[in-house]
Image (cartoon, rainbow, N blue to C red; front, side, top):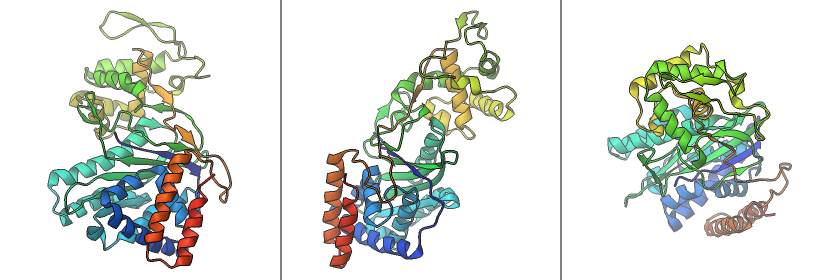
Length: 397
């Protein structure tokens, strides 16, 4: 399956000093060169997709372990480190922070031209990049808006190849940032999507500072919600719009009896104020008179997507659209989605110089040991190697 990790950190507003960035570029170039020689480009992509490995690498290169700036600075340093040697290494890095992230598709297509990739293959990479951002913005509604997106892919001369995404979202209210990792290896086929799916259980290693109550539409528990959402947009527009508006009309009385469309069937709105919520999300929604939402819903009923991934991929579909469909599916049809944060374990709180809580000692020890081996094989001066190894042990608890 895809692997994706999530890590939450305090939000940084400063800028990485030039001397530190230049040092990170130099050190990361040495690490990349050794790793490619030892394990090949596909293994590098796999490691970048691992949030523990990524975090450890940033620490080894002397950045604060729990700073949000680690994500943007490390990915920028890696991109600069391979610049001019992409084809030699067999790894290609596209995108970045802010405006640079929006250039990701053009950069992918540019490398596709240089590498003479088949048109379909290059376009598939662009599709994967766009969908990863859409999934984390729309299907994992955790309050973080994506502002950084870096797409890594390998293209070894001998064939093969894989891709990974490291992207970060910002929660300005809580002044925190959350990082998302994706990896393309071992895709899992889902009949609901009709292909290797990006929308069902794409998580493997997930790290967060704390868990939240979120609308998690990629969880296995949300599969029925996905199915009902697809059925909803495959009916006529007026029937769908009527059901969406019921959410607002009857949100103040969740037990009122209603008639749905022309089904001539009375259903009871679910009692949604249970132990999980003081107030259910539906009570905060107002879908009446939202012309843009109506426009997107009309578009969906015209196009009639065959599966949930196609629904999400439709131009204009965003968090509010999928949330409206999910709430209709729950309130009217009883298809309850997951409201569990996909984070499975967490870092401890602490200052920038504190040692993080060892989430998984076995994993961390393996990661640190491998990084140490790579450091020792670089051509760096002994004193630099010693400092990098000491930095690695900062990750241990």
